[in-house]
Image (cartoon, rainbow, N blue to C red; front, side):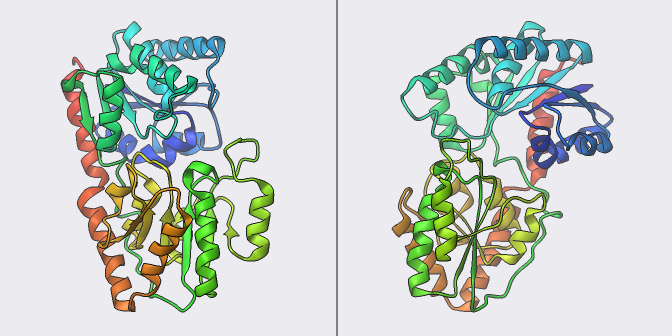
Length: 369
């Protein structure tokens, strides 16, 4: 069987889908990774899968470029004689579904997160809903990563009940992200991992840091993630400069080895406005880190309030500071218990083996051999 996997970045395929690729290769199947070419192509090919370059704009809707994208996907499906296509992220989900239907090739979509765009009642959301209705609605199967996203999506895009499934995120390799407990110290480090954009709660994190450092001056607040100054939603340069000058925030840039940063942190924080299944929290939890996040779809499924961390009100720096303070005033033994609970929670809910089994079962049921 020949299986195609299409995502908006080769980096994304390598970092988040390597396990499922290795599984199907080990099962004797041929796997084709389809994405815009970047520096991760060689790593994918070293795993044993083939690669097809697929130029794709990251965002926006342009009828001409999107029609060209549809044509290219259709061409790849036909050339590679794919038996099934697995799609992730918006454009691959939409245009992969259409191309698959044109060629009678089964397509399994993964709606990894709706984001705030799907909730807003504006032109962008209306276009997105329209495109989902003409494409994903007819997919062979659609996976969601949290029940709220599934309910909201299906209220606007009525996919047949038999063609829908729920996954606990993308799964995680629990051996790779092994438990690495850290003894609580006198200068605790809080780490936010995510793009430096409004919707990830970057401004609330900075506000909370300023509040907490007045009470616990030794506490450190780090930010790790991509900062794109051209993105209108990004943190403004003058704000980031101000945070660092005042010592509220230490911006750590980006890294290919997030595990080394998690090891140095005491707690990982994500004050996001909405998530699918936040992988950064799952990875940190697997490495025995207490978690603090907003009480929103996605986050609330990874953080069990009081068990492996704390939840707080969304869009409130003060409420986030309160959650951080809850952790800081705990006895060391209580902090260590939160850390142990995080690992237990990820082992119970986010083992990648469960995700692989779910995909294998669906593929077996829809692919005609």
